[in-house]
Image (cartoon, rainbow, N blue to C red; front, side, top):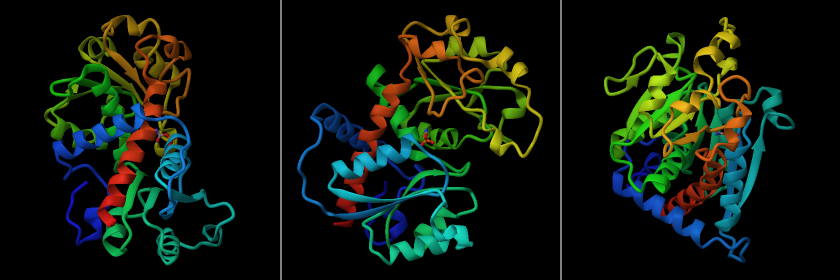
Length: 308
Ligand code: CP
């Protein structure tokens, strides 16, 4: 979100480390203006193409970036998984990106595993990259849409307490929140089994081994998906996890009435969260998805301004 025009890495959005508070609030303001003025499809001049490369599965992020492109006058060319592409013939992710760059997209939106060094890629090519979820490294637009939603509810972020419950160790969403919380001044807390804690926990992060205590502390609780695909076959007992950390009607008795419930999706019902939670008036789970489309549209418009 930095504004230096010379270097492609500065026009890209790989993480939130260098984003200033002013830049983020300006993005929130643009997203809210787009949301408040939204009337459905409109005729807008086409500006060119964008390449949306989803090397890993996605529903919310991919569709919201596609919608955001369409609403910004950019035609999205979408790669969704390896099937039908030359990745099936062992072409590398890097070569895929270099070849598609040769077709002159205005920008890339990339979801990729840790194996792709997205930061190095942004230094190497000339086209901006927006990180749409990178291995365990970060998911900046998810953190932005989460905090726009918290901001919409509380009208301030300073000192707000955001509790992450679940598989913190493998969460790129948490990585991006750690960056964003330093800039926006909100507090981060974790509640999870010790085996789901990252190898090092930031000094400023609160840890609650008891979910009840974390819920009593939180203004916003973010349930996280248990990412079994990143556990490398390590043993995991759903029953033990549920007994201690499930977000359900009973455990939500400990959450304040004016606090909010979030989950980035996709949800594993019956593991980290029960379906009944969607009916709780404090749930903002679908509001996050709605806000995501507007945050991403605002971000795309910012990137287009930077390259114009
Ligand atoms: N929250 C999120 O990134 O969802 P998708 O994997 O469906 O994009």
